[in-house]
Image (cartoon, rainbow, N blue to C red; front, side):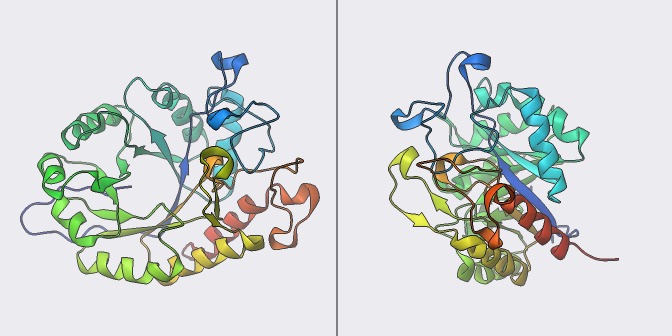
Length: 314
């Protein structure tokens, strides 16, 4: 989330509130029954439903993000885990993700989950055009925006746009506090669990706070994208230890917001959405000692543990 802001000449101290939790959410999946074809599950030449573009297999099976029952169930899981905001992947007006946005917003609101927009690097995106995107998305009640790959454009390009904004928060995906300050945003976030590990968190927040920026650190269970993209890099889950280590580091670093990468980015294997055992796929078996059916929800249960532990107590 790029906490946004529009900062007049002298940079104001960003408003600090109680630590909150958000999760990156992807509304881009499709099935023939609902959408006329498979979307995303078939990436990289895979043949759903038995063969999908993920190292893991969803407990609810291959689903459509346009299925209201699925989205409702997902928002219930997010809310029960203590997550208060879903940062929805958005690829421009008229995209499939845009078409599913109203459905996601409606389900989220029924369960007390706020919605932010993850502004992705869609073809033709510009810094100036992002201002138009924000104006469009504000009509849906969205006020928090996370700009992925913010360094695709110069800080001065961003500043020309952010200097016109009011009433929103923008977060830039970068660890460069100086860049974010010059861009006129109010905060930074990391997203990528491969690049930004636990050892980097204290430095990132220290530098962000020194620049009067908000620091939104991203925790995640691991990374494994070989089936979807051919990427051979791996961040092992280590039975849940990776997730715990990132949570501990984010809290020690005094993050203003903890974001989770991700609820359901199955391509990159960062998801905490329930996964089931299936031949040829990895599973959550062994996470925190859980086996069989009880392991399917292991990461949502552990998320609930951390959000409860980290939340302020009366």
